[in-house]
Length: 142
Picture (spheres, rainbow, N blue to C red):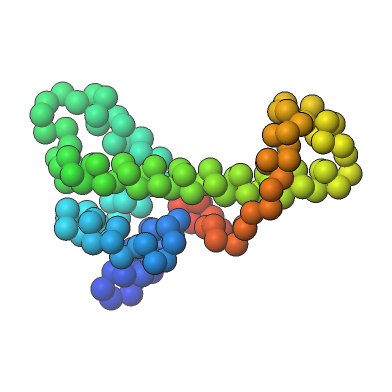
């Protein structure tokens, strides 16, 4: 993460999976709930494991307090979901390029058989998609 004053660059790094024009409202929601980029990054790195453990092992009504309370937990959990959705879209874009390359060499029936999908699904998968608007690396590999 960057150590620039103001923290905006920290939020840009943590929210890199979101389009730049959508980051400000997300950042504002976090700030209004007292959530820091460090907290969000920790949840993204562990895939929400600590949040899940806290909610499933809750021993009292204060289970959410270590994270900043229920609002903070809801916002952080939503961000874990946003990252998961981004990674799913990124994987789909990569798969589309690979399937398109396979179709240059093999029939749709052969590709479908190898992938375990229908012939029609092969054509759906291979629809061209942009691959440039995704994060280069996952938060846990930075």
